[in-house]
Length: 312
Length: 290
Image (cartoon, rainbow over all chains, first blue to last red; front, side):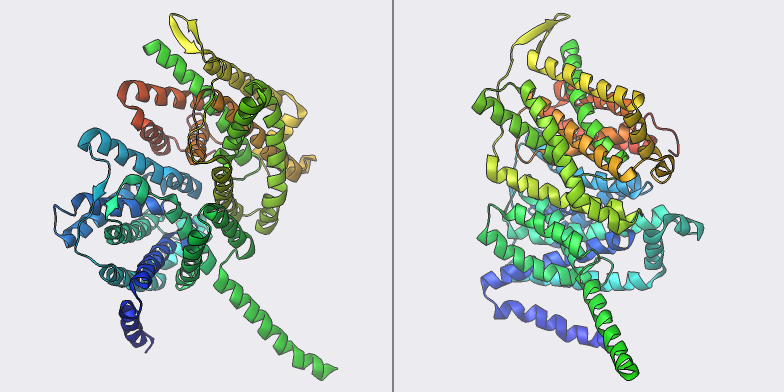
């Protein structure tokens, strides 16, 4: 029954660009993009607690692939290429770091975007001689939004499926205790690797789909570290271990950030950082967990009150 | 060409080693992975530059001022920001994730503050920029001074950690945080001191780097990354390892910049990091399983 409800909900979401104007549709593109980014980020980093700070490395690779190939190949093939490149990169990163303790992965991901940005810049300047490319694709904002909506819905379904499968269970055990996981016969490295590659491929696709919004693309535009930062804070706010957590974190924060970046462009990064710290300190398990806690407490007191009154 | 590149590499490596030493103390003793480390180093860069350009105070005097300030700032950050996280985690593995996230947020705050205050332009100043001839090659005096001071601070710290009672206590906390208190060591206090000491070293490294390199408010991530790579190459908590790994990294970067392409230094850094991860994840000088 609940699955049937998803169809009208999706249809309603898809119809939104007809209601909103150009500005509203632009917002919807960003919103759908971040919901998808955060959901796929949480797919891997949520249960394993391997914080990936490299979201924009994959996102940027996706966008840049489109910038390079958009005049050479038909659009679906371009997307396929982007996904392939993202998956290969994730495989290489995963193979070299995921066999080790989580800290190595975090450190590696911390500088990965900067590395990829510098490498692409170097390659463009020295080999091809063109820094900065144009994307001429016949895609309007609403077309991009529909693609992102479809990808986002698919990501949520995939995420829900993984949570129920043996793979998701294995991942949660790894997140709780790697030693226990290894002793119960879970192939640690392979499980982590599979999930990381899936999550990174989706992130790459988001970048690829959003790329036509820019028209002009150069490495410093698509490898903007704020994207990695926003993804992590959105996931944390909603709760990275829950299916709907990323969505609950991404929607309010995206709208807030849109407003903040228009209102305080110079102090944006300070505000972001302060908000990030506020989330880490005040809502360590996310807002959904906090609401549940409050509710439990509420239920608890209402359950004990009558008993007290009765005894008194 | 070769000899001068070698000298330049060693000199750069000396400062990297010093930077990495601070990060290594913070992670090894206080168990806090400080992703905002490069930002603190940049704060020292800007402070020394300001003192030099507006008061005419030489960077070596500036060093004497920013190092205690770095210690104080490290102490304050540990007390205000890290202690609640340490309390919350109860000594579990959660602390690592929490501190990574908290310092990641701090990174953006400090970077934002620096951008607002100093702008995003590259900054540098000219101090003792004349060449000194060594073995037939010339090297800028400021680089040479920075190298000597790095080594003095680095080996001085090594001597303190090895020879003094305080240093032994710090090493005990790094080695066995769960049992150090059994021999009467105040683990919390020494963790705080280790973190503050790391802050002092970040300030020292920043002051020295500013003497010979241009920098901008957004460079913090790259410096943190280099320090992290040196720490991992040398082995966490291994001071001599960090010194040697720092020199190696400096050499690799300078040689790649001189003989291959300056745009590929970061790639060279990362290649070394990857090689170490694949070949000896416990560090070049670490013991297996350590």
